[in-house]
Length: 142
Image 1 (spheres, rainbow, N blue to C red):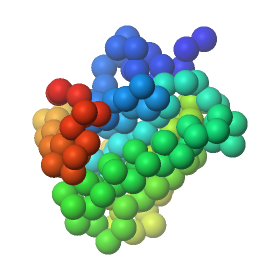
Image 2 (image 1 turned 90 degrees about the vertical axis):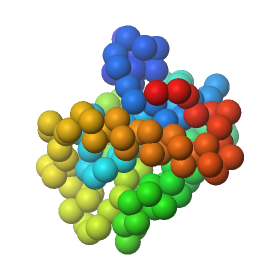
Image 3 (image 1 turned 60 degrees about the vertical axis):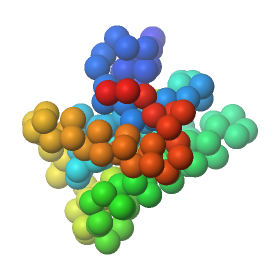
Image 4 (image 1 turned 180 degrees about the vertical axis):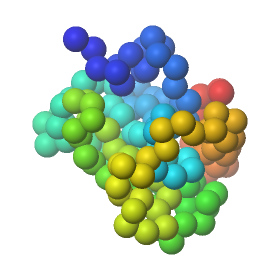
C-alpha cells in the first residue's frame, strides 16, 4: 500500500513542492513547526533511514542542506532544525525548518491549520532561493 508521501509524490494528493529530481522531492509540511517547514522525501519507499540504499541518504541530506541554507537566509533563525523522526509516516523523510528554540522539535507545537497564503508564500520564497543558489533544474514551478 502506498504511503501518503507516495500519493503526494504521484500527484494523488496536493503538495507544495520546492524540489524535485529523479530520486528525491521536497515539499512543505501540512503541519509546520515553523515557516518554511520542508520535508525531504525519497521517491523510493524506504521505511527507516538505516535501510536506505547506498547513496540515497547522502542525496537526501544534500537536498536538505540546500533547502536548509535557503531557510536560514530567508527567516534568519538562530538554528535550522534537521530531524528524522519516522513515526508519523512509514516512509523515510527529513524535517528541515527554522528553529528559535527547543520547542521547534516538539510536534505538539505544530500548526494544525496554517494560513494557506502564508504557506504559498513560504514555498515560493524557498523555490526562489533555491533557483538563486543554482538549483533551478530541480525546482518545480508552483
